[in-house]
Each structure stands twice: as C-alpha cells, then as structure tokens.
Length: 179
Image (cartoon, rainbow, N blue to C red; front, side, top):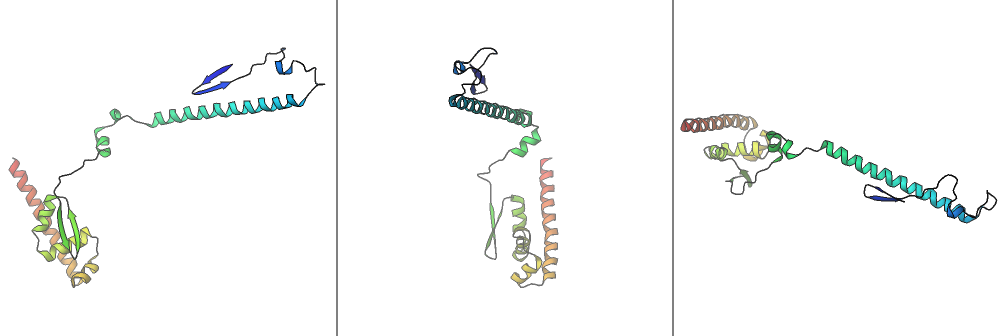
C-alpha cells in the first residue's frame, strides 16, 4: 500500500490480526525462528524508522512554510511609507560637484550646498570641507593648515553661520519666486 504525504510516497505493510504474513507462513509458534525472520524484523524496524523520519521532516517543512507565510507581507499590504523605505532611486545624471582640499577630492551631490561652498573664500571652505566632509578635528586641521586650534574653531563656527544664512536666503528666494 502506498500513502502520499506531501511530496513523499510512503510504502506501508499492513498485517491483519489472525492472518499470517507470507514471510511467516511456515513458522510455527516460536520453535522455528530462523535468522531470515530476524533480518526481516530489522528491516521492518528500519523501514518504520525511515517513515517516521520522513513524516517528521515533511511536517517540519510544512510548519516552516506556514511560519514563513505568517511573517511575510505582500507589497500590496505595505503602507506608502514602508514602500519608500524599501525603494531606491538611481541618479544617473545627477550633478556632482568636486572640491579639492589638501590633495583630497570631496564630492558634493547637493547643488545648493555646493553653491554655498563656492561662495566662501578658499581658506574657510577648506576648514568646512576638512571638518564636516573628511572628519578631521580642529587640532588636525590646525596642524595641516598651520593655524591655531582656536582659530580653526572660531573660523569654522563663523563660516557655518555664513553657510546657514546663504542656504536660508536661497530657500527664501525660491519660496518667494513660487508665489
């Protein structure tokens, strides 16, 4: 007899009570036990073990599928905010602005920030680029530009205020132009 369990086919042997299996037809009681019956018992035990293993593996597989299905969410079930987090936009023709400072190339993708940086004198621009884009400390910038650390800190703070005014001024001009 064959049973179908998932994608597994399981062969089973059915022994009815009171009827002798063909393998045991010539055995009488327990007096004629031969080794072939012992080997068949081993084979049946192994078959039973294999069937249990296959059933448990199939059950585990179906349980895993059910758990995965319970955890998965379809794209139609996602909110717009979740979809935006998953999405990415390639910018092939985006404008890239490259600034050079002490032999390092600094890439700025934002047009407004690049315009604001270009409006600065080169010495102040270098301090901003070294601090914010290359991650150097005021002390390290001072060593590279032959300045005192407090001078670097003072110029950086003042330049940052200039950039802020420039960017807010541009934003205000754009806002007035749209009205």
